[in-house]
Length: 321
Image (tube, rainbow, N blue to C red; front, top):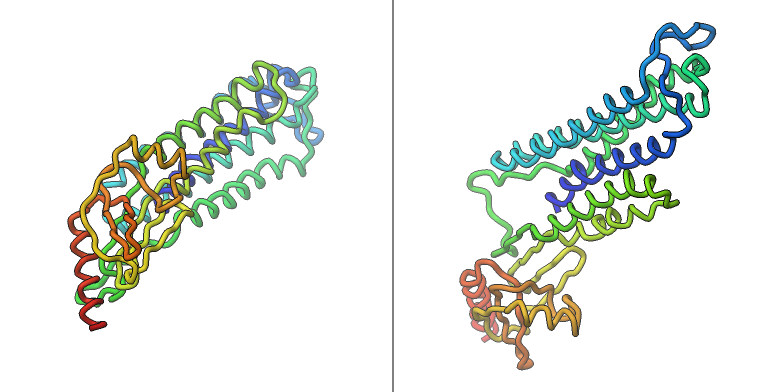
């Protein structure tokens, strides 16, 4: 889930802000003058100099996109750092990217809003209160989104001190990110931003229909990590919110198995991917149960998992006899 929160914090949240600002800006395109006041135009002060609307949009929009892309690169490069160091680097990147993008997007919209339906730059007038709001509101929005990004980063991982006694219940576990799900989520999020920011306004479609791919990406994100835990009580596995548990008392023995892609697709189509256990194709831990059935559990280090389950079963049988 840490990787999922990272993708959400440094990827989808800034992308949604950039896409939303782009949609609004494109929707206002025909209602804006060619230039905006650059000096003056506040209160009773006359407009002294002007700046092109396209320049303002390009500077703030491209700066937000550049910071977002640099954040994605820094987030990916931090993978080589240690656990705690990686956490704080990624947290800083998330907070910085979300804060800057939020400030740029809100400042852009607040600068353009007073110019709607104005014939020229000299007709754009700002009150002193709105002028102060243009300075304060983007900072407040940046602070709020920065706090959201900080919350998404979560707590730093706790390094086990030397000589510490591990949890006696947790004997063996493995966890891995499901990269195809992450890639699919990223592709859907990017396509959603493109549709909302470009295609929808250009072809004149009303509403936010183009946001459906991005919404689908958010739904898929929780399924981007698989976890298998074996302890004295049970074998537990989870893919996102789907969690399944096989009590150790129901397991007769464990052995190495393999789930072909065709079989996996057939089971998923007929019974649902989580009808038995959250399964993925490939090497699997095969559990023979006391009722005569056999269950497959996705596993990377199958040999170690088989030895762990059989050792725990033997200890349990010895203790009961």
